[in-house]
Figure: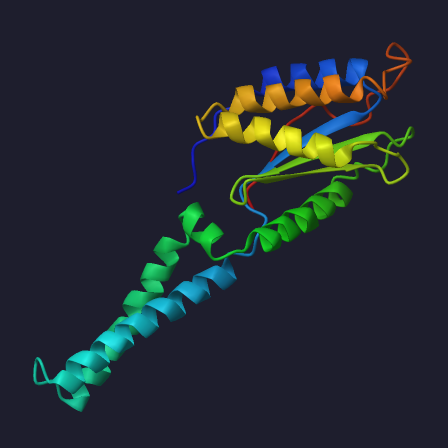
Amino acid sequence: MKSKININSESVESAIADFENQVNFELVPVIAQSSSPVVQVRWILFALCNVIALIKIDIIYNLNLYALTVHDVILYWLFAIVVSFILSWVLVKFDFIVRFFLPAKLRQKYVHQKAQQVFFEKKIFQTNAHDGMLLFISLLEKRIHIIVDPRSNLEGKQELSEAVLKILQSHFKDNQHEKGLIDAIQYMKSFLIKHYPKKNADTDINELPNKLIWLND
């Protein structure tokens, strides 16, 4: 089931401001409930439940355990379709079930695509200094994706992504979502400040709001 997440917006905004005061990037953190199209998983579950029901009906009919007629079998099959449909809609609400039917590579692909979409929809690339940075967190897939303005050259992106993911996962599993996000932002600051220190903190214009964005679609 979707876990309830409580994050103090002011604490996150403060962490973002601290990050941007010391690092030469404008950070936009985004948390999405899901990046994967769960519709396909729903239909897989429907088909699976329906097949199981049909196998059971076939066994009962062939063994003549309850003296079923063909008419009875048809009625049971129609009932099985309805139950399978309802059950598939219920099961798809559990994230661990959806993840089971989505291979890791496919989940990573969907998160990457969604992050790219958000990066351009939120116009994070439209900064004068080309310093926009997206930290995209997708809860269902338990994956993140970091995107910077394509005109910037971010060194060690893979290493940074892996470290941030570990920080978030270690805290999120204990329902410490706010601490996890703030610790992740602080780690990003300490990682990036070595090569991308802020040079003109007093004169730079903050073009992107220091807000945490929630996506529920």
